[in-house]
Length: 308
Image 1 (tube, rainbow, N blue to C red):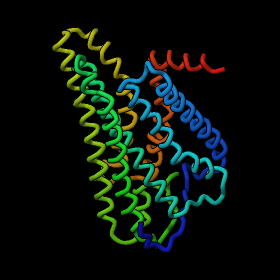
Image 2 (image 1 turned 135 degrees about the vertical axis):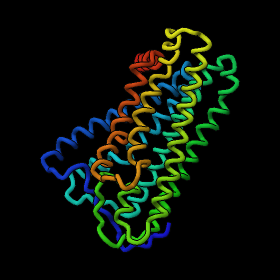
Image 3 (image 1 turned 120 degrees about the vertical axis):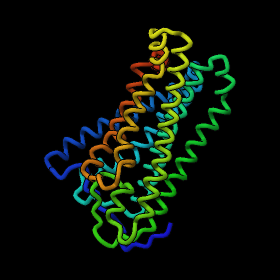
Image 4 (image 1 turned 180 degrees about the vertical axis):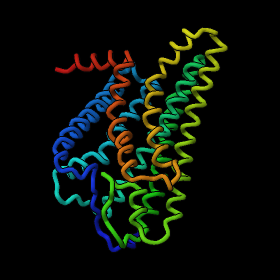
């Protein structure tokens, strides 16, 4: 990546300027990060170690847990460090790297949720062909594909952002490096970068969201005409309720920050909403899936009993 800027580091201004809150926020975020790593790590271990969970649904759930651990690790450790530091600097390369992995893991998770919705659709609407359609090879190819697309999507933003000139302020009004805050610091024309951010990110987010809604639409229509029973419909949809909750929690903030018109952009609002998908969603994922999923809870108990 070509660096054409005289700036060698940025300063992350963080979540708040109120010094009295720094210690409280440090402890809170540290606890949340611990829950994210241990909760998602437990799910990942259970899915890998328990043969009863070697199915497409739990294969994708394992991918989701892995993504959440990595996704939170991109931003939270640096945030924790800055709570205790007076010089909240991040190097230029570190900033671009953080931006890259943030968009890489975030876009991959968005697409993975669409794949999980398709898995629900096949399981409910095509039960006799489920093992044929969602075989191990197909599931692996789907997972690898979304990871690769996510990587190159992030690479586009990181390369284009690294080529900008930053000749003015180097204070980032955020708690991590993202494209929008950096565009506000860049000199010269950033129209192409802004267009790529909204167009490419919108295509991935809206496409994944549309495919997710389409899967749920076909599930509802299929069950309604197949069973003519609201009770059976509710029971079937309850199997996908955990996934749907994650869709709402993740897509809402993503739409607010990256898809709304740029003229309505507010860094304070973006910073607040970013907490939802960088802190809240990763910590809720293991809670949602363990509290609502009997198989995961039973498998987790089996793993605990096997420990010496």
